Image (cartoon, rainbow, N blue to C red; front, side, top):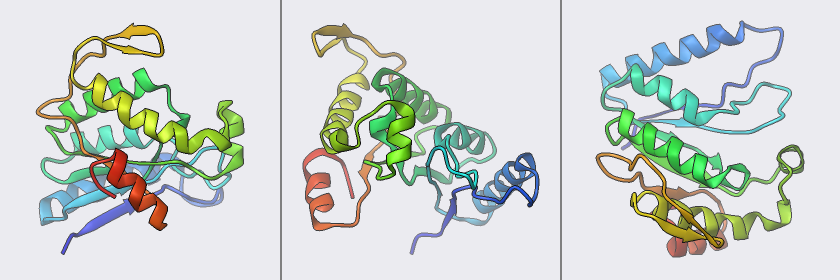
Length: 185
């Protein structure tokens, strides 16, 4: 059995101060790490009126600093909204800072408002998922590679090893896609 804490950081404006919510989450993760929880999951959404967590990698970095062994899983990162070189760099740094505890859960997203805000096409999200997985695997090697007609070198390499890519979804098609392009579903 896997013991997991999950945070989406949703809260109404009339509740506790946002800073207090983040501080409590960090304290809870430190406690969970001490008592043997296995993983913390961090969701992502943007432009949400309830304050849904827009920055799972930033929050995971803070949690990594407050823990020693608990795995840090994005559940899920909205990969089609990211700039690929920046995503490769940020995840490599987080993997290194956490000493290999990142589990990179990615998903295609579904909320039109998020894609509009980022200037991305909701209709292209499934194609983008394949590109994200391919780019990350190439980038994390630490070698120069060609991407869309340009030479790219991403540093640093994730240490001690690249994080596994977990593909989110709840349909048979998502499971088949995960088998093709990711490490797990």
